[in-house]
Every structure is written in structure tokens, then in C-alpha cells.
Amino acid sequence: MRVLSGIQPSGRLHIGNYFGAMRQHLQLQSKHDCFYFIADFHALTSGPRPSEIAQQTLDVAMDYIALGLDTEKTVFWRQSDVPEVTELTWLLSCVTPVGLLQRCTSYKDKIAQGLSPNHGLFAYPVLQAADILIYKSDLVPVGADQKQHIEITRDIATRFNNVYGEILTIPREYIIESVAIVPGIDGRKMSKSYGNTIGIFESQNDIRKKVMKIVTDSSTVDEPKEPKECNVFTLLKLVASDEELSEWEQRYRSGGMGYGQVKKRLAELLTGYFEPYRQKRRQLEKDINYVRQVLADGAKRAKSEAVKILTEVRRAVGLGAHCG
Ligand code: TYM
Image (cartoon, rainbow, N blue to C red):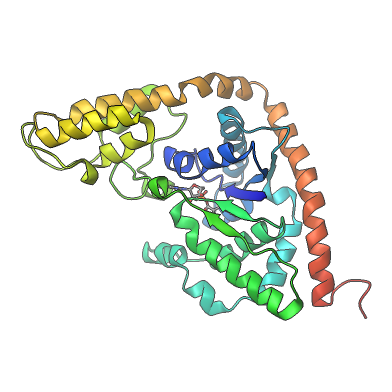
């Protein structure tokens, strides 16, 4: 099965990215044919500085490799190194109704936040559809915020196939419900744009400070508490064993536990979880040419796949030397 996913280089990766998507990406590597990329074309929709996007792309690459990306088996590249995807975006745009994009919630949210949208932001889901369809992907592991984008991809692919014949593979999303929306320290979805993230490779001290700031209710130490409504407990579920979780559940419900205690333990578990990868991350920082080489090799492999489907699509719509 062909598995594909992408992450934007729009800041340092956080534990929402990791538990919501990357952990699944890494787990699927051993059994499937995996394609993962750094979505720098998509990141341009929010107007980063040129030097910023280059550095953040390398940071995402180092994070992935440090966390266990199999650089031999998995195809890993920078989206813009395979520009064929932008041609497919155009060809798909011509079967994409404007209304479909106007209904897109992530677009509507950005406008609601006061952002003045550029055309790239509006067309974002079409580029994402091209990313998925150009590699004939079957399965797309993502967090819940991307569900609608995968539905739009299916819609666009079906419309294309209805007009031009069964060329495009219809993909499905792979979302693990228990980690589909990882909350940030303010209780909203963890997101770079809300400034509520805990970075995967932040210093242990910064992780601790952020965990201590997680928003909780104002109950006193003595009062019993409901773990299911607590942001700290939701994050604890990502890293604690089942046995430890049920102990904390009891301590919440019986009263006499302060949030400070559970926060301290969460910080310990989180820093412990990522500790083994820090050493590898530091090594990669000293060997940036190796990281660049991995991306260049990945781009070659990705490109050879992309041109195959693009050639078929061009032919189907009536473009190219063989036509006319
Ligand atoms: P991006 O960069 O916003 O996020 C990368 C991945 O992390 C997941 N994620 C979360 N999951 C759970 N809880 C959270 N708080 C959380 N925050 C982020 C996202 O769901 C995503 O899986 N549009 C994509 C990039 C993309 C892509 C693609 C993905 C471009 N082309 C093709 C799949 C297939 C995005 O913005 O991801």
C-alpha cells in the first residue's frame, strides 16, 4: 500500500504534529511503501521570509530523521523539488468547483482570524490534492484538522475520473481518534498559529515551564476532579502507561491531588519520551550536508513517480505532443 503525508515547514514541530501524525508516519514505514515530504510550497501561503523557510525546511528534515525516518526505505523530499506537482494542481483546478473551496473550514477559520487571504491560501486544498494524487497514494495519515482536505481530494479525483477516465487513485485518510486533536497549553488545538505549542525538541527546561502553564480549572487541592475534562490528563494519555493512567484517574477522582503534581509528572514523561532522539538531532545539526543529500535523493525518487502519473493526466486531458 502507498502511504503519503506532508508537513509544512512553518516553525518548529510540536508534540501535536508528532502524536497526531508523525508517530503514525514512522510506524507505518516498516510495512508499507511510504512517501513523506516537507510542504514548502504550502508554507508560502502564509508569507514567510525566504531565509526562514529554508532553515525551517532543514529543521523539519532533521526532526524527522532524528525521530526515526528510514532514509533507505522511505521516500523523503522537499515538495518544491518536484515542481510537477504544481502542473497537476493546475489541471485539477480546472475540474474543481469554486464552491468546494469556499466551504473549506481551515480557509474560513483563517479569514475569521482577520487574515487577508491570497489566492494560494484559497487554492491550498487543490495543491494538497495534487500532492496526494500524483503519487497514487492509498492512505494519508494525518490529524483530524486535515480530514476535510482529504475529502476534497477524493471529490476532485472522482470528478476528474468521471470526465477523463479512471486514472486517479481515490485515497482515504488514516486518523487515530485518540490523538486526532492534541490540545495546546491553553486547551485549544495545539497549533503554531495559536502560540500554544510544546516543541518536540525544545529544551527540557522550556518544556517544563510550558507544562506548568497548562490551563486547568480552579478547583482546590481537596476537591475531586474530572480527568476527562482536564488538558493535563489528555496530554498525560499520550505518554503514560495504562497502569499509571488509571492510578492518576483515581487520584483525580478522590480529591487531595493538586494540578501541580500531575503537571510535574507530565513534564518528566514528555522530556523522557523525546530524550533518546536528542542526541541524534544534535549529530544531524553537525552534518547538514547529509540531510541535504537525503532530501536530494528523495526528490529524485519522488520525481520519477510523479512524471508517470502526470504524463497520463496530460494525455487524458488532451495536452502533449501526441495530441493534435
Ligand atoms: P501541518 O503542517 O499543519 O501539520 C502536519 C500534521 O500534523 C497534524 N497536526 C495535529 N494533529 C493532532 N493534533 C494537533 N494539535 C495537530 N496539529 C497538527 C496535522 O493534522 C498534519 O497531519 N496541509 C497539511 C500539509 C500537507 C499534506 C499534504 C498532508 C500538504 N500536502 C498531503 C497530507 C497529504 C498541513 O497543513 O499540515
